Amino acid sequence: VAATGTSEPTSEPAAHPTTVSAWKGRAMGDNTHLFIAGAIAGTCEVVVVQPLDMLKTRFQLSPGHDVGVLAGLRTVAAEGGAQRLYRGIVPELLCGIPKSSAMYAAYAQTRTLVTRARGGRDDALTSFCAGAVSGVPEALIVTPFQVVKVRLQAKEHTGRYHNAWHCVRTMLAIEGAASLATGLQVTIMRNCVWNSVYFASYAALNSKARALRGAELTGWSGRALSMSLGFCAGVFATCFNCPFDVVKSRMQAEVSGTAVGSASSDPSMLARMAHIARTEGTGALWKGFTAKSLRMGTGGAVGLATFELSLDLLRRL
Image 1: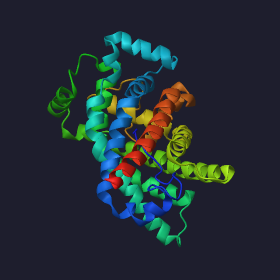
Image 2: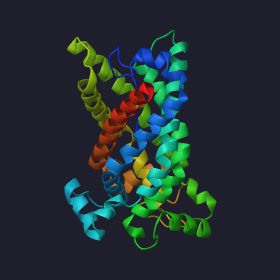
Image 3: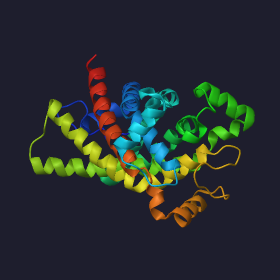
Image 4: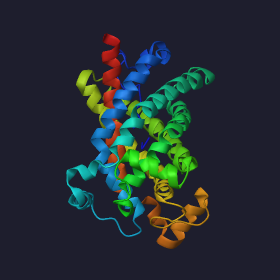
């Protein structure tokens, strides 16, 4: 997570390579396929949702009221054309492969361990636990790249950084290497909360859908259902992690202790949340919610479909 993208790897019917039985029997021990499929899924997700990610960050850094998504996209595009919507995509792409691969592998391995510890029960609670663990390695990998991405996307820093590499060199020279770890704690919370809720809600939705339809959907019909459930689960999970993401964006946009938007002089995560709620209202902790929901929901759906399709194709080679 993003932002960071995640997917539930057990949404296909029993005869398909990406079913529950397949994951327990083969995929859990096949890290090569997991890492490759995760890398492909992460790359595809970034390309599709980057404009929404740009808009989400802009909304989170602004203390004013959010405009509509379409109006916001037009405003950003007016600054420098369509390419402005993809500003910050380089660090996202660079970290997409390692963070997605680490997250998927951590989720799969933890899910196996939790399932065994619970006597073979592979349900929403198992997915919740595995998702929470998967957010830690994902956050450790993604934080430096997120700092650079937020700096590039912040309107207040327009003209300060020419590109991603220039941003890194400038930060190292002025703020030191520690600046690239800004917001690590809140990023871990953001990812763990989103992943756990996403995986658990997807597992619950998928189980309910299977019970209602009475028969398994195969091929593209099954993948279409997976994408729909992934989108719903992604939007639902965003309800819970949005406050952490707002604080993360504001912390990572700060330069030499000077805040962009509204921040507290106290660097702790909870203190910053309290400051935002006190000075801008509780609703400010969910700034950019629509853009973030669309970004995470679409990312979850795209990541899910791409991951399962890639895993299927890799096993057929």
